[in-house]
Length: 277
Length: 277
Image (cartoon, rainbow over all chains, first blue to last red; front, top):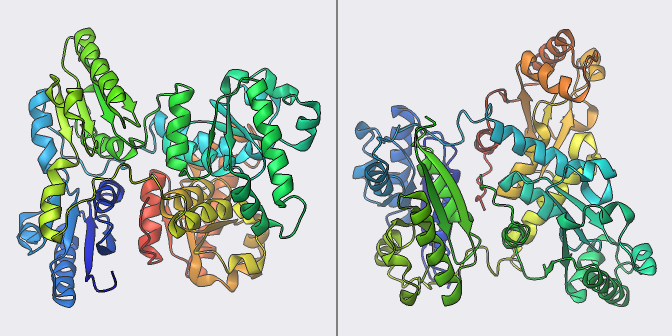
């Protein structure tokens, strides 16, 4: 594998470049045998920047000895920039799809630049910022009953089962207000959910995790503690699963799942059809 | 505008559907005159689910009286599902690009499902979760000197200038460890940065914001307070900008910028070329 030459991949955009990079990564992930060096070139929104970008790509071709791959969401590449004539695999993520969409919708596209531009005043955007602040303020059980009423979803699970990163991902990517609430030994002794959660039962979603993985994660935090010991992790997870089963809470095992997979599964389960950003 | 019929748009995927939706949104944003109802159908990874999905699309066509638009990142749509034969505008985000990439790289694509699948054990993914935990733990000046040494970037600015959502976006989307540090009246009186920031000057990036917008945001938090008054907001922002100028800190105005634009600008400014996730 170390013999494989490294191919440089450019993501160029008149906006942030995030869309170009997202689809680009999905496509490149289909070639695990190849090695890529990735360069993001955002905000290519005038001729000077386009000429700069074209120069950078040409120089890379010389240095690498192999032509680069370019993923572009440029809406209007200036013909004078020469970007399209460069010797590179130019993957135009826009052009290919805009024409059929124009025909389908019977409308001309506006050819406006960057979907993340000019959105800061929109109500969708504001709701999303509010969701991020909500996730920050309602992490790890720091919620009053009244505040939980505002949550779209409440994640429950033992400490370090993945609740915090998932809550933040749900907020950032989907604008979903996620609170999270740890299940702790006191809950297991009572074998009951904390009272404030009872009233919001329909919003609950549980995360569980393999005891070995949990112990490993907790070791990094508090080495050689009872908290991190495999016996204690086994006990807590077993008790949490019994409690969730008893209370009829949907849950998933986060052990080998990414926060993207966990979040998409939760939204499907609680029937929240929120757009991704 | 209310006369425009609503067009249903499906994002279908054998994985989370996040990639399909990201590019789909970019394309749809080019048609602000159209109205869309968006439906995400993730995890279409067997024939039953594909048949279900095909049925849902067909029924929608009947209900809407107009054929839906389908954005698909299905790697291998089962021919038996009939998905490709449905009367819809079927936008295949994969097929179109995989062939030229295979030719370019001289490799067959693996046709594996979902780029977010099986990544939870990768070092990239772990670094990203660590970045999220870092952003949570180092919000609003809660950092020791030693911890700031671990930060990739340290955002500074007055309270409510956008530091917290930006820190989290940088972590979630780019795996960048961002701490943030408020500039407060004491700093302005001394006209100096807090001592611990001095040692990490090369990592500093400032956010500023229009006083009117800041006052509005603060009013929502603490109505009719001195903190939220336009006079105080004007004073703080003026003082913060003087301080940043004096200390030679790069900054941007977040007033009408989205967290995507702010983050892409910061990464470019501090020369962090991190892949987006």
